[in-house]
Image (cartoon, rainbow, N blue to C red):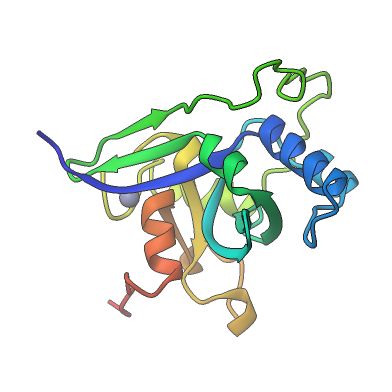
Length: 187
Ligand SMILES: [Zn+2]
């Protein structure tokens, strides 16, 4: 039996929009600008790279965007627990776990996607994924929705968007890389 390495919560764009509307309504400290949110692509997994226990019954989520920016969003613990998750196993496979939604009338949960997906995938991502044959550099994950183009030298540290400063990593390995659990050596 494969063993679970990690479980990562994520939001679809619809779930992100719902959580953001709720955060505004519930007057939470961190919300996302709705106009900015609408510019994000539909076909993307917005995963929670980490979270803090913020206040009683509230979590502060760190959510990664397609352009590798981190958004802060405060949600109730109930909402967080209801989010779907990706479970990574030690044999390089994964599973998607959909959790029950706690709001019985489904009113808030209707995901009517009427807006056209905004296709603004960064060129960097496209080039890096191509260079790696759509395959995580560490494991065998090939699902494009789970693949990210990470910068080897962070942009904040002067890294550029050239292909050789990019590495294709799955969500799981990107988080490991971001937290310094995974290092890339010169050779
Ligand atoms: Zn991987």
